[in-house]
Image (cartoon, rainbow, N blue to C red):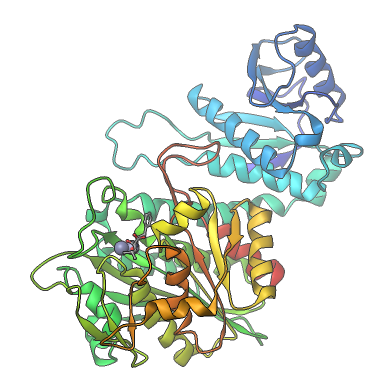
Length: 494
Ligand code: BES
Ligand code: ZN
Ligand code: ZN
């Protein structure tokens, strides 16, 4: 569906040739493309300014029906993300024009990569990613599918490049399919992904791989005394589960556990959320989606380390059976917790999953990912995830992976003296802080209490997991934040 190709523009028909154009430098090394750029620039209507777009039809000397020129801006400001975005934008334009077969001229080759300050691999990778992700449309719930994805996308490159990077498109496709799987789970409405259904869907996808699948159902969770997790699930008529997906390569050097928050709908429970905060709370399983999709993706990518995805799945609802503010529950680890607020449910399910993971899998590293706090969105906005880590090296690796994939992360502190804010008069701990401020930090401090000195990081994705407005290569809804980051981390840095 997406490929690197060498095509003779003079003889091969395509519906659209897409040319990314730099404002102040030549970035293409195919003579025909340079001539086509000169042609449009001579018209003085299009200079290659960032986000400008112009279409010319039936140009002589080529068999493309139209040429879509996309502005990249000035060379000094172009980076890998500019390329991901321009590819996404080009795909969106093609979808709008109802095209099914397009060719994107890739700005790679001698002298070019030096100008853009990135290697050929990164440039091609970014264009392929932007195009593939931008081609995803979530319209399952619409009767009329007005827009259709582009059927055939090719990147135009010289034969030596096509040959050198022939494995790249399939690899990008695998990563993007994982991201899209997470996006679709997140965007699915909460009535169609109640805990049993979401669990079944994860299992159905995992069964197509060679991952080992272990599910703890409600009965087993009760037997094993997952007191904190069960307290959150109580209010719902749907039954919770803990999903464990295991990827084991031969002779792994270490084991990494990924834990993802899977609240299929967060009403707040008895501390019911107000209007305005409820409507998108189907996204509160984005951490679970990221972990499950990562596991399914790495089953194909096959990194060298052992990875276990541990996913607690619940629905947080108010009812006559729901946990109350003031309730004291006993976590899997034996620590008692006073529930100060039933809306701080994510940390309750995560700690039981963390304690169980440490006991069962004895990992060297544990990373959790969760739409955990509104406070993190206040601190970093909607585009950047908060990263907390017990170890500088692990934090650095996560930040670097996020930079590679443009899933942006920012490290926040874990100050020891904040721990006292979680004290309870009646239990070992309280699930909320006694201070109004620093909620993202105190939530992370709460999790840290249960990590038993295992190297650990926590990624709060309450901001970037979900968007209301489309971006260049993501429609409204789930973003799949975390999947590409985790896969990069596991393949490249750990
Ligand atoms: N799921 C929410 C966090 C959230 C908020 C995610 C906004 C995405 C967007 C979480 O369970 C929650 O409600 N947290 C509370 C904690 C508070 C009660 C201590 C919050 O952030 O207000
Ligand atoms: Zn909540
Ligand atoms: Zn929540």
